[in-house]
Image 1 (tube, rainbow, N blue to C red):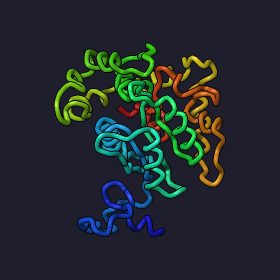
Image 2: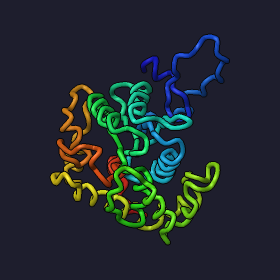
Image 3: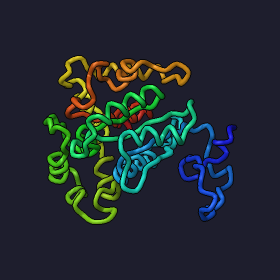
Length: 281
């Protein structure tokens, strides 16, 4: 076991960073037994959003981590109060992992946040280092909405209409005040909201709708089936893929520019990687 691995914390696998010698002492880490079954698949994920993505990923983990006939898994999640920029998610997950670890990042198109240059740069750095990117265009809320309906309207990176529709959809119970209520309730995913997302057939619908958006991409050569084929060959940290090869893991063609995948969301790819298809709902 590497020294870095011995320094992992029991709250998700995070390795301790170097710290200022003058800083207050931290609590000692827990016993090795608290780190969980080493046979588990550990997926390291840095996420842009402060609340929603983390809550959703914990919901996936609590619902699907242990299933008959499937390898168990757990997420090691990394975020920051106030959120992370796209490039910062890539930097963070690389900082917290070893080359052979399975690494993902979540970030949004979010045209209101001046990231036209940063997103392509973050994508290329991720590709070079074997990090899988979950890009949502315009935002992660599109993935939530796809549980209830298909959405094909191009919003140029702005998500106000997507959120409005999510609040208004008759089947999206609990989302009526999404991103409007105060505190954790504002963008949290729990209670009725979680129940709505996991209701019979919803996960399967979200995956199907997200795949339809890949196939309908304006580039014209993007196919969700290409992602299925690429997933059959796991990323080999010893053999870096070209950017085009890495891009095909999303189902999008090598020449398809990320900023033009409007609308789209790659969350379905993480579920596919975990063999979550909604069939057992």
